[in-house]
Length: 421
Ligand SMILES: *Cc1c(COP(=O)(O)O)cnc(C)c1O
Image 1 (cartoon, protein in one colour):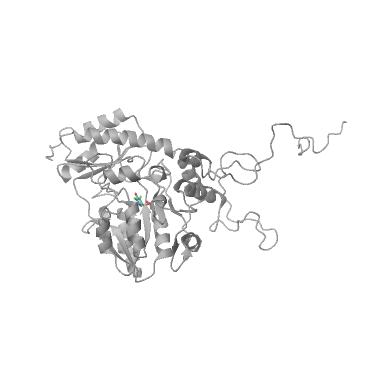
Image 2 (cartoon, rainbow, N blue to C red):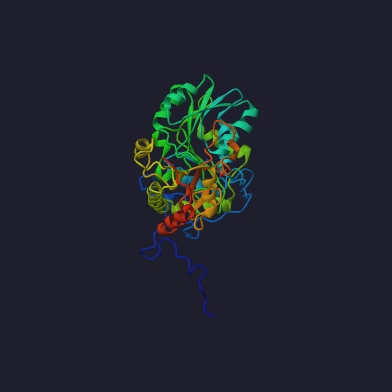
């Protein structure tokens, strides 16, 4: 019997064949690469042990220690840190041009962590007068009970924001474009307004995604995402994220450290499979957003000519009040289009008659969705200054063939009352 040496299949450095370079030491720096390259590679280095090109879903809750406190790669317990969540957080930070990203169980969990990290009872926040309904509910029904006050203002008007600020304003909350009215706020101007009075600027950039705008580069202190929407992109995961640069809060503490502390202390982290799904979604964000924008532009132009449509709200239209600002701070104008019809009955009827657009809440997935904000996503704002018009229909323009989408909208509007402009 011939003796095969134990290490026959394990070439060491001396015997390695040409072309077998040793694994690169540590992750590469992708910061100088383009958006799509960062989306595909940042946080997703091949696994050093196996070469797997996709990060694993690390389901372990705990990690073996080599002697008390001897952590192998800094991992201790998965609420505090988890390798799959870290991969997503690294990618998010790279895409927003930030220093640190934090992934949460939902967009609202991310918002809640941010509020509790930077605010105290007695503090005041300026919020958009057409904020996402859930954001408004968080401020009006939850944060208010803990002594945080808010004033709703038109965020597209920096002077109105300055007028709404008080000596206790610690945070200006901006959403751009807004859900569901597609209002546009000038992030650079708001950053100046907020910083002059010692407040932080948070930007909910869910509609734009990091592909279309990067608020940190415009002066914002923290970016908020519902990754449930375009970042995940397939309507199969609920998640949220915060990304920061090097801003400080509460007497000079780095915001990144405050958020890291609160993410762990409050615990609403993204689970490993959820984090993995969002990371997978991000890899195709650039190509998906290009198609979402192409089709939304076609839908907006088409509906503008339709006699049943009173008004099309889309920042890509030259006569949209926020068009100039959007053209300056966004790469393109996004995949969301809202329309106003003759009245509430016409809006409700249209929502019930589409066949390619699915009647459902949420947005940003591959499939087109239609909804009636006043009765669905924004019902919690009824009777408040944030109430949305009852004749409004919101469209999330998906990735189906655009001809099918246009035909579906025409069919849904057949026989609808003409809406005078
Ligand atoms: C959906 C959404 C949120 C909330 O995110 P969830 O993931 O549903 O908690 C926040 N902001 C905007 C603009 C949204 O569309």
